[in-house]
Length: 91
Image (cartoon, rainbow, N blue to C red; front, side, top):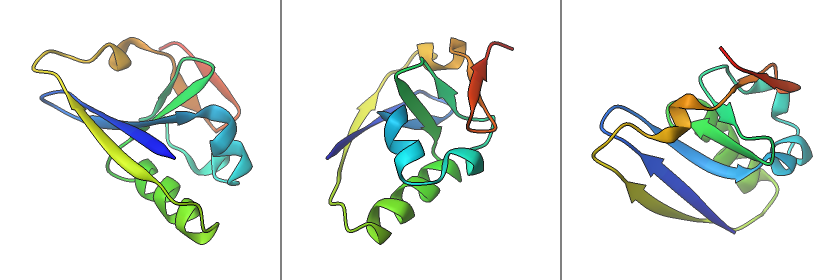
């Protein structure tokens, strides 16, 4: 599995299908510092991404991280925040 790692000058997010977050059983552990567009979860790089990577390793699922950097503010910051792993709401 390829995981896109989006980065802007201030922060970064790992993009994965939202269904994967639920399947791995980490949905309710994801903080509101992560975002979603409904289909994908954009997991913040500090804590939530570590939850994802640990869960993938525990499940024996191989992955590759593919970095993507922009010098501008990422559009991810304007997406609805992940809320308690169950729904997404706009700020």
